[in-house]
Image 1 (tube, helix red, strand yellow):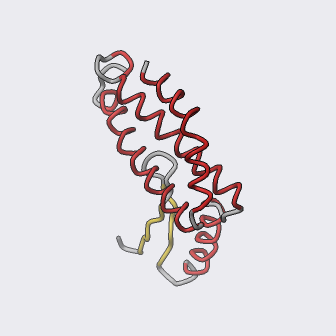
Image 2: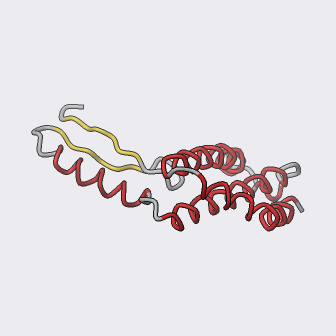
Length: 134
């Protein structure tokens, strides 16, 4: 039921969201998207907690409908932000990740040092710095 509400809100809110996202700077849109992803990650941790604890799927538990609805709503807002970036021609996060990888590749020429990309959860990549003898 709340998931249906999220879809209904999307239909009514999309025009407003799109219009105001278009007025933002590329940096503003990127920051907005990062903030939405942080909120999504928080909600997703709540959603996944019963499964990680060896319990039933959250959909089988009472009271998790609100979590599912909010998770879907934030996911829709992320989609709006990504589409606004694409429409505006902003440099995507994927391109930035490639640039970071190229810079790190150059930095790994330093003896005894290397960088490894890891994804601790979700689609949010980060790198870790590993040293010899660690």
